[in-house]
Length: 306
Image 1 (tube, one colour):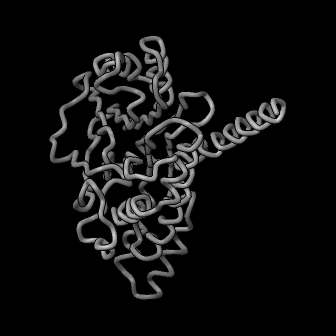
Image 2 (image 1 turned 90 degrees about the horizontal axis):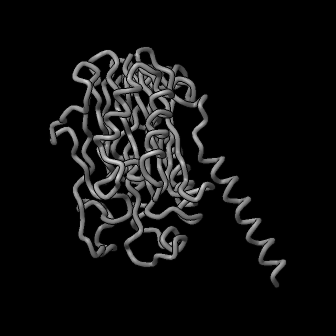
């Protein structure tokens, strides 16, 4: 039985490596916008595959917006056509963190990836934009699915995913929805530090999979231990100054219990602020690795306003 066990373990590891490759963002998919430079990376704790996910959406490259605009106009859907035109100047970023960092969590991340992109197709067809409604639908699915909970060996209600989905325009405006995720950090080149952000611009609701909306049509069929939630809110930030940098990340980078503090992260950004988004990202990770041991999956997206 031992040789079989070794073979089985090897096959699982190979499968995990393949899964990790599927989830690793392709540099060619990173949105290319005038005035905005973007780069991101995910580093699994086990070195193979974990529960973190980064997904980029370059609306102009991924979708035939002109065809969709023409179709909307032919149906008299002027508002949808207008919203589709706006997407030509936007790119989207999804950063998610499945609780845990093993193979099962990597599977959940892959499922989230597929659900998310399927949802975008419906959103563009019905609304001409990606709205918070998509995140609501994904949350409902993860709340109600015994299959997804069984996947991670959790038949209760403790399996969850933190997530931030945002769209950056070429003007530096970032509109986003947060589901229990660490808030964005904005580094001001002028002041050479992270700037304070009004809490009203950082509204966050519970992670995916914990609470359904209190106005969900099927709410009477579901009795979660943690009660219900309000709808996810849309926040907005602006990268107004040339050279400003925004960071999206998972708590594997920095959290209140980590020896890698926000102050250290701030100094790392300051030293690398003249570089590209990729160079800033690499400098942060080098500094992070030299300062503290990695204890969780780690993801980081750097957005620089040029």
